[in-house]
Length: 260
Image (cartoon, rainbow, N blue to C red; front, side, top):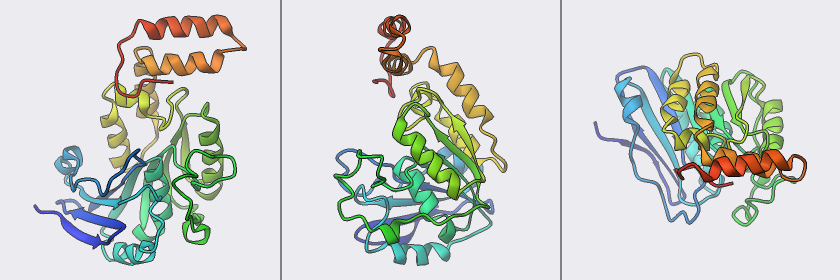
């Protein structure tokens, strides 16, 4: 089945692949260094096999989906609500899921290391990309009824504060802490081929986070990045632990998601 273009703007794009189920998975572009336009119009074969409709929301720039086309996109999205809508988003994509949750009529979302705003006072990582940020247009609206998971690494100080702010607006999202997972917090899982687990949680009718926690625990011992991040945290206060962690990291092969 060919994808349907739901919204085709200069800055934003939304593409729908219809499935046989009355359930829809919504995905969002994540922030990417050197982004040079829209991501390809592809889809997840895993979700397709389960019959899900898939709606991919894309942005040409790392602008957190907030620009002169945001309102028009929201209007277009309201016209494609079908059955039960669930979302999956990482970092900027997690913010996008929360920002557009109302327009999409989301019932559930799995958001990984989302920002409450790219210009939050405690976070200077994205200020170079969000110089024209419109706070009124970008402000998240509280949605206490939204269920799902808020996945984050509590040892990334900025992400912990974002998670606390998101929890106040979306208290129905269960917090899943993946220590030394990095940003986004599923880097250890991604390196171990565990993204399937995240997708399964996102597609579940009732997600608990248990499978993601278990997969993270199983993958961390073999993750060079996990040991490096542990070493960086232990440096200064627990030098012996830091040295052991660095030694363990040095004996592991590098894989996606590694690096402190």
